[in-house]
Length: 448
Image (cartoon, rainbow, N blue to C red):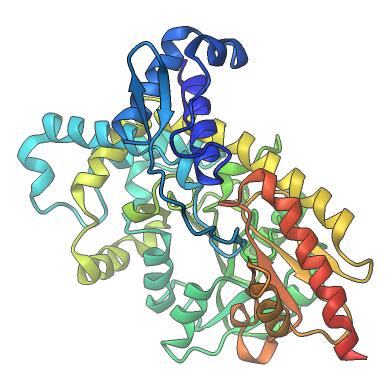
């Protein structure tokens, strides 16, 4: 019943948002909606009651349900298509379920939820995470798992910590996300970049870097990379791990998008060396509730003490209440059901986006990713600069992101835009991409 109930709420919410259902207009009858969604009358009634509690609709005895609003004329708002925002779809975030888990955590642990705790996280949660990670082919004992305030905290701490190989330099994919660039540059570390694109990375060049430079670790987002949306094959992952073993280099594998991978038999790099050579990090921000700031890191034993001290110095520990709620959310099976739903949703978004790219972009434009609904990049044709296209599209109420700040200064490319369709209504994706394609054609004349 849960899925149908949520689908009905989403459908009515969507009609209210784009004013296909106007203030004072009557909603379809309960019986009609039950037939349309192939569900019970009780399911529809439950959805209508929830919408009524949210003051989005109201009931009139013997007349039915109506959309809330006034009869005052409203100024028509422009339809903005936002390809910049890259968080979970707000309509799909499990607010109510997590609220229940917070309440249960308080009832179960009582005062323990409001006391100081261990820097590396609740033992009970670390045991639950150890079991949960097995679904991602990550087999790690609870003693090697650290609970962190979002995976970014783990990454930031690891940038500064000394590693057992006593090396100093960092190798990083180009482009990569802003926050990791900030972690490096804020410490005056000069990283070595390597380009990642639809074809992967140049493994021969990577080996040269590993052999000739004093590399402490290689930072990689192995699945649905930000901003390119690219993923490595199992063969590439295995080869990169073998190179790291050969040249005594660590890998930090940021797998915060791994839960959304619908491909069977795809493994993280960690699976090819669970000894500690590959440090595995994961966040719940992109698939659960970003504001919770919850993540984890699987660390080698040699780093556990230093990491624990650095974690304690940073924030003492991650908030215990949210940890307890996450433990209940995972153990109850709610997370698994939520992820399965998100996988279907984002795979559909990715399919729509890829089709729109092929239909609407100029033939001399290229794109990467588009296999998930989160990230992809478009490589602009000719000498066109992303900052000019961003400004041009803003006038058309289409928001895209210049990817230039996601490069280290010496590797910068100014002809790429990043798109995310994670929060874009499926019905608006093609229209938005068409405007992007049209915008490219309109700007092309200025570069002649």
